[in-house]
Image (cartoon, rainbow, N blue to C red; front, side, top):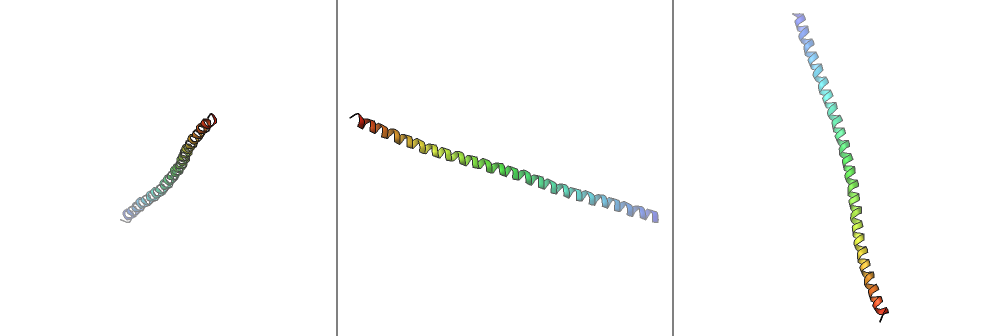
Length: 88
């Protein structure tokens, strides 16, 4: 009877130990997965920020180019006016 009781207690402790070990390992892996996912997300956010900066820079060039086109049109008009005045 004592040997049966000892075997049952030993079996219960073995199962309990295995369960606790698996739960601990599972939580550790979950934390590692969360850390890995957070790092990936941070990298993506950094890349997105760099792309947004490039787009903003590109948009500024577009605005500046429009201003340059307007300036060229004004210069052409002034040249035409000066040319007409010169040949009067």
